[in-house]
Length: 267
Image (cartoon, rainbow, N blue to C red; front, side):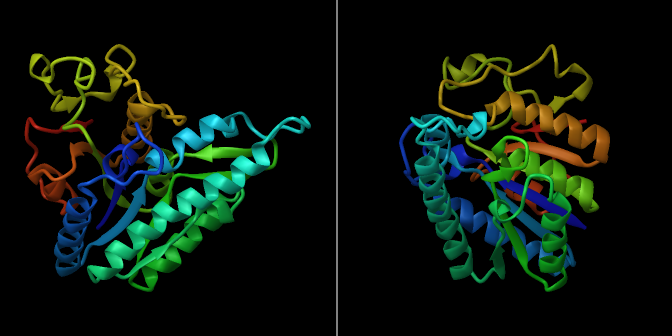
């Protein structure tokens, strides 16, 4: 079986800053190591994705990279494209190096190397890495686009593409919150809100979680819920959302069926 894990940008890097690693990054990577060792012993497979956090979102917003390529002479998008690629590679190298030190056979795979309409080629490379026994590590990225010049490819969308291309048993969103709330616990007292342990995809439109105040050019939690809905409905894949460092996060990455009320399961 295959489990695809997306380490959220807000979990691995502080989105409120710029190019700032999370102080608990080692805890997250330790959990990934434990999950990999468990999966390997069971004959199962891990695919890893990580978000951009403060290594991508502020830069994309500053240089207006989400809007496509601008040919205006005053545009500084070329500078922005080169800068954001540097910061994204910095974060990716940190993740890859940390997992390599923990003994995981990780190989980085940058979506930037492929056009937005060359998703089959990207998935073929993932397939080849899996055949070699490696853990492919993808990430949210700026990608070339034949129509718009460039686009933002989110890690959440990558989870969807992987679920379309492979028999993924479960997609795990590892975030900085325990699950979905009716309102944003970062904005109000968290103890006044209840986690939604089971979220039915048919009710997503009326139950959209409130988006937080941090910069997120890929749509934040609202977009995450939207991609979760598509994965469940179109790919018939399990989708869960849990907080880094929790037993729920480890159990979900290990493909265990121990669902609790301290996480969110989509169906």
